[in-house]
Length: 435
Image (cartoon, rainbow, N blue to C red):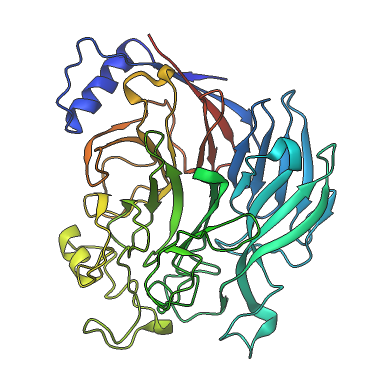
């Protein structure tokens, strides 16, 4: 089964480019033919992938665990969640509930020598401040360094390198936050081989602006979990913090031209964002109660206050609970804002290779939902042309696929193909052939 675009659909792609605000002429454009071929189907909430040059793919399923697909299509279940069956090994502390579970995966840049993977997951092994009265129902997000056996069929060693991403009891008075909400969870290897960990606010109002709590932050650490020496957070902040003030970052990647980090982030009832990160910068999310003129909020979390889900203009919604609050002098202005809508901007990957034609260098972002208010464009992959300064966009083109899914995970492979995981249980290999 393949899904392709060519001929008249290519004309539609040009029209979409023009409608998105591009001033480029369609004449002479190198518009590639794009095909999406499923490589795995029937999975359970595949969340992230890491692709090796030989075609080996490591992937996570949120409520099951870590597996490997060999280049010949064979799947090996390597390391599972507590209670998972059919895995070579399991972590008794790892569990899944609601949005929480096994999430991001990234291979060490020296994987061929050390066989190391970095995996983000929910664990009940460690307990943070605020959970001492309810240990059995506390959870936290951790990052594990897994060393695989020589045949890569199982885990030879597990070392937890980040263990103190803030914990929160699952029981909650927040009416819109289900169990384990806002984990972030994407991990990527960035310039110099350092590990970047994209986090969420865990529905704790204090998290994003706290100098000590690691929820609502993007971390930059070495492969032992230590702070990058050049991190420059504000005075008194944990040195592992690269940026703070985040709500729920599920996408992070690095622009090929200069290595600059960009995130894709979920908004509340409004304002999904793409942001060019600045070392030590503030993304501007502040959901805590009794600040900025707010009173008390359910579960001490004002991230949805007032209830703005229906019947309100997007600009009005954004004025109540801004994603990028201009009260903060160190605010990183968003590169892109989803026209005041919240549709769940998820994973992100820069498109690399001349085969992508006019789309080379654009940031591909997955979108999970249709958004509130009946927006006309729903679940999709956007290709965003970002200005050289990172502070704006030149235009957005919807990736011309013949199907619509909840696009959860996007990652580029060494052969310049884009791998895409959907919540419906598939992983696709998306190729572009330049004309």
